[in-house]
Image (cartoon, rainbow over all chains, first blue to last red; front, side, top):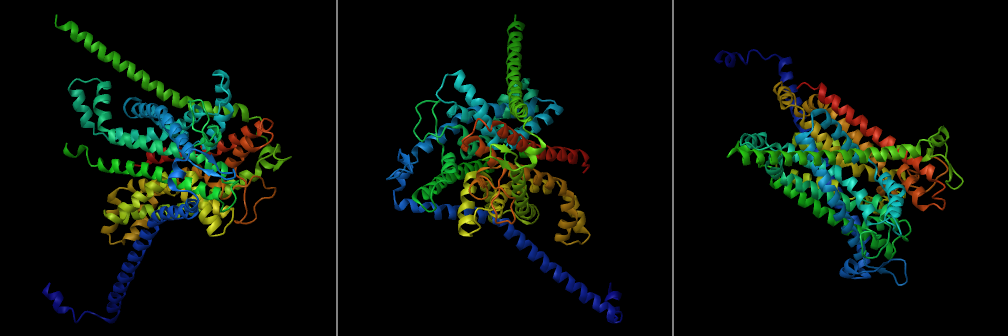
Length: 322
Length: 293
């Protein structure tokens, strides 16, 4: 070592010195490049957040002017939606009720099916069927909503009308069934992930105590996966409440508070999609539809934040102790 | 004496299990039948409408006859535009989230942002596109506005898929590269990205399927009721398959008369979307099977 240090002044010839300088320079540019890339990527990743901000900004920009005409509570809880009358009435309470009813009903259908399918896929099905069923559920998720709406219109609606002798087949039940078809893949795939993440040791411990497979699923696996399953249900509901084409085509479009399950409703997304084309630019109606969009946005945002919170809070629990 | 109740209890427990398994299988069967039922109904009613003319002609006689060529072309442009917007942005975001970011507030905000963006209803994206691209940036109702709106709609899908693909690349690959003195960016661009490419591609294909099938986001930003000519620039309005189905099924004066056209258009759309999805699914399972790390 000493010899090396001692011989150092003798060795460096001119070219070698240059390479040291060069490599230093290179290391420096490389480091600068790394920093630039890192920050650029950070900024680009941040665009998603910016986008969310922009969405809020422009919804408010186009939606808030309606509140110069009416108060927030009149808008939210007013029971008459007659945006084209003179004078117009912009109460979206019937639309909110419509959205809530079809969402709740569709989840009553979709949650059992989605959850049972998830149990089947993760706990019971043989490997081959499991793969096929997962693909089927993925394809179901990929079905364009307009096709589901069309199916509900031309197949389910006439059938319901005849079978139950109704004035119209375009009603709450029809819309809920078609929405359930859209929500099932969301619920099932997220629940399946949750069930899959349950540590094997839990189940093995249950079997070792002599529990049957059913008991293990019902009393060990499902409770252990409950936070993931609740996330799944919440996200399924968010999907259903925000879905547009199905409710636009199948819910019937009546902006009145429904009296029964076979009445027509006009959920918020349907109202926006149906009327935006006709609402004069920057009119009260136009602003009211954007304001409806604000309500819809914050409802789904709340659902998503709750789901995010639940899945984060319970994430670390699990096999760590075993 | 003692054996009898235990035995019947055991029997009861297995009966419960049998019933439960039956119910679970039934649910899985119903879901399968729902998908098959929808496809079969559309096939049965729509296959007669699918002719060469149907695929290559413009609509005629106030959309009661003719084909859907402009809608196919429009959907193609919108989808390609959306993927051009979403793929680079999504992959870069995913690289940042998996390779660069350290746990902390910043990354937490981005994650929540992406999750929330994924949950924004499609019709709200449509409103945003209308307010921002169409009105504020004065793009008008155009391919550009529609493609940007759709692109941002599928951005979270792409980020999610790319992240999953990047996470699946073994840590040892990165460590080996870094140990050889390769810089981080080179490690990512030469080692990590190529290994993750099939997974990213799968995500991109799924994004294409999603973008092609969406209606609400393009209703106010790009879709035209009817155009007789094909678009010449990105500032032109276009017809699109999903919107065309909606228009024919709800807004026409000849709704019953155009049923075959509606079935035909719906069939073309699901063939396109499910075909694309199926390619992604098969590709992914091939990649998974081939992978040996």
